[in-house]
Image (cartoon, rainbow over the protein chains, first blue to last red):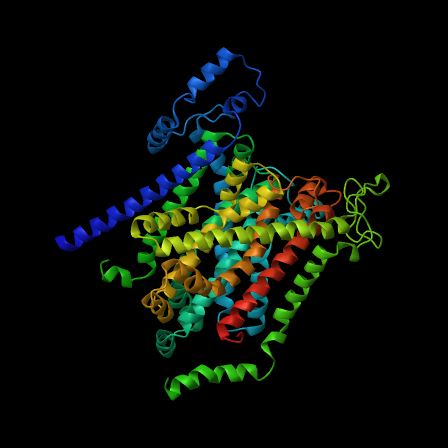
Length: 316
Length: 290
């Protein structure tokens, strides 16, 4: 059907437009913010002290394009950003993309473990307590509320004090090995699990109160099968609206978790970049954050179709 | 309204009200009591402790919690409990101030995004969307990078970074209120658009905003302490909560209480404020509050 194809193409173009608009907006806001930062970029380049003479200074300024008018710098920056080039980091003297790529590995490990752990915790707590086991349900939702308002670093410090310093089960700092990943992942995952658990339980209870649940029960399907095969799908739909909040939780949580546990990663280079006013790196990191947000949202939209078969039958 | 609707509207209410007055539930009273306690710690910190928060004593360095020092002492021998008590005012004023900044910014941005002509409101909605795409902590860090550290800048960073959420709420509320009868009435009577906005539309968005702001104060205290913890908030000699626990991070192996106890105070305060906000939210939703 050419009509529906055209419709789909138009939808795709509009979605692409929104993506580009978000990225462009993020790039512009970051550029303005970075240009507002007081201080002399050359002093950052040379390690904080103005020890270089005038000639060397001029070379550096020209090399990093700081002598051009702002609008030219902006156009240059946008053009380069389009092809993934964010220039040289002032602090590391390496391309920004390289610095970010290196730091992304430990952060992805941490975030990946934390997300998987949070999903497992949230799903099992929701499956076990939605609409039954009143005592456990009250206890778990109380715990969820506490975890949601607790600072991530507090959980980290408690875990570190208890399991690393007192019991000495896990290494205190460092980013090597699986053992060093356990405590940070737990610390990062608990607030996420709390948020997800709340929404999943609500979604599951809502689904189980609908007529289809009665039909399935009447067919003789067991309660566990009903919850896992039929209820969870509905709960997942409700939970997927939280993607943005969860993603923000992962990103800011990993900055805090990496600081508590002394891990290297995106959070650490973000802090360093802001402390040392490493503008190209700050810009690159902001764009990375926007890009991750956009990509994850697109993935979630695709996931809707997988989760909800109704969307497949009626073309959008 | 038909009889059936009336029944549905009132019946559950009377059943719930039968046992205990909703205002006397422990879920409301306990957090309220703690928040009142925090209020006293702000107004009269000397009621809680006789010790000076900044009195350095080399004889009492890193003492564990005990009867003379409830929270122990820090690396300079200062009494940690009195530092936490005296730090309350700074932490809470940053939290409340930041929420005010976010509310005012949110009202301005949200109302403009709802009522301005499309040429202005559409880009504004996009800006709100883009801001929402960033984690608040990252935005706050950017603001700190521009403004520098310090209590006032922490307040601004936390406030500015959370404007987008408030703006979204205000915008959706304004869009709802705009369609209501009394606004139409005021417009028909020839009231000036500004007066319609300031006298009818904005006041009617305050109720949900107030709830979000109550919960938001907790979030702001949390964000401010996170910034200090990362070394980008309030500068250490001040007794702000986040600065206190950031100080103690270096002694976690020999004196875990220096970090743990202030962090616990932050956690309990935020939980109390959040619970209070949520409780108010359910009470408002049920219509128990006039």
